[in-house]
Length: 288
Image (cartoon, rainbow, N blue to C red; front, side):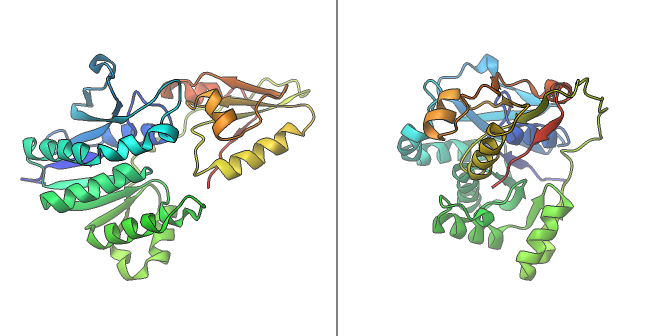
């Protein structure tokens, strides 16, 4: 790594909540502060004293790309976010020049940041690496456009390495893209070890499900169907912990969560997630 300076670009970063933010944080803890910096998002006008300055001594920068009013953001302000794309790209380029960056690791799950990193690599002549903890153009949802397929195809062609979160995802990509198999490398550093699992003190009269995580377009279909099934069950509860505003769940995503056996809780910090899970009988994980 002598002479190398790498920028790890990720859309979500603590204090933002959700699985992607946790993955960014955990992976960043393994980075060498001599050779890496991290760049993530923040809300417009967000106070700097609420932002991470570093992760295990790795310097953190923030780009003001998030617009949110009473839980509403992309639905109304996506056009404004796109309007400022070139300004945000120029800010990223300034960071690259200031830190004398030679390489950039661009992660998905957010198209805006994925394209931002790839464009920055092109304009600054950086060595491009990719990191996937989710699929992108392969998700096959109605919202996945031809534009996404082109972005990923171009990025795969230009990238020196394509890192994945697990051997499973790595195997999938190698099978799907046999001509570039050598580019795919497992990087399972967001997993440390198994934590203690305790028996739930349940009297058996009510079976308690828990859902923890973000609900968005990528997993909306499976989440909707699963919630509908649970709503029809007897002697069952569903406890929902999500950073998504309740009004968004009801009015934007059309989830019928106003059920007598549904309970929506405030999201918990990442260090409390495991202990919170121990209160329930089963955890639900939905995916596109």
